[in-house]
Length: 420
Ligand SMILES: Nc1nc2c(ncn2[C@@H]2O[C@H](COP(=O)(O)OP(=O)(O)O[C@H]3O[C@H](CO)[C@@H](O)[C@H](O)[C@@H]3O)[C@@H](O)[C@H]2O)c(=O)[nH]1
Image (cartoon, rainbow, N blue to C red; front, side, top):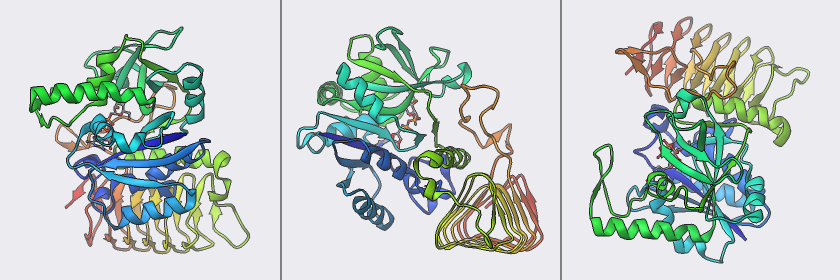
């Protein structure tokens, strides 16, 4: 019997996701038409023997989260429960705190998944590797280029046995081009080293971490306190993948992840991809349209477009590389490129909403999304355009490389600005 834990963090996390995380917790943000963590749940539910999925985080359980849990339980016919940490306990503290719930029923092993990653989740392959040679910790690893590897946990392996010999979280100089994907398979023994860290923290009292922040004794950093500490002791192994994988830290990376998942749908969910039908809109490449959306037949959509519930797309609209969220309206002949249109927003006719993609370098197979900072030298970097919720864009204007905060009613064009 198997279980899975998804680490969903909490409201203080996901700051790079603003203004979109104001409206919905980041793990529920729709990527390729479904909430970000539904992709995780679907992957877990497909592993034979999966008994229960636990979400661990420090969000107050609100209505969207409760509704999502109920819908997921029904759809996958599996218990999907939320366990709330009393304070942010780090990536390992929640696992230790809720150990009795995780181990209830005696699972053979449990998956641990970071919520903010996009992947094809090769969970069955990881399970097969674990069953072949069980170890307390199995990490999924992929490759990155030398510069970008510094943004991730870096793994030095024994190439013959795949034992993790050395682990450094976000090093300041190059350590290895194998990075931690934030997808793990732990055996029940993995909780023992977490207990040791917990007791050590209790003895030391309040702790200061490398960034000078105080953290409570219940806080456990899986990466530094466990992986770095136990590397080279025959307990941690890495399973390498060359499948799709990306972090989802910002709105720009959500758009990129949406493209990856829409591409995956060709194999996994062809029914979710819109098809060209007589009298329907023109579809180019991979496009998701929610069944309740109204799309005019002369609109041209795609590639990489995702249209949410109740959206209205008018005649002559051109949409590509964009996400349009629940209840938004794109009036006739608008053009929306490389953008996210927030919940209930309206774009006036003949308006153009456009952003600049910052996709990984297509000539470097090991490149990932850059963990973008919004500014450089005090200037807003060109990036995708984001309209927060209930924004109104008038007719015949241009909104380029800008971020518009919720509830703004604009009266003219804007370029390279954050509109507060
Ligand atoms: N429950 C809970 N979850 C948390 C907490 N803090 C973070 N998380 C969740 O844990 C995951 C990792 O979050 P971060 O702490 O922001 O780490 P990171 O910068 O994303 O780096 C991690 O992921 C990379 C892969 O995406 C790894 O390369 C890296 O080594 C590390 O594991 C996210 O899903 C986040 O929601 C917490 O206190 N409690």
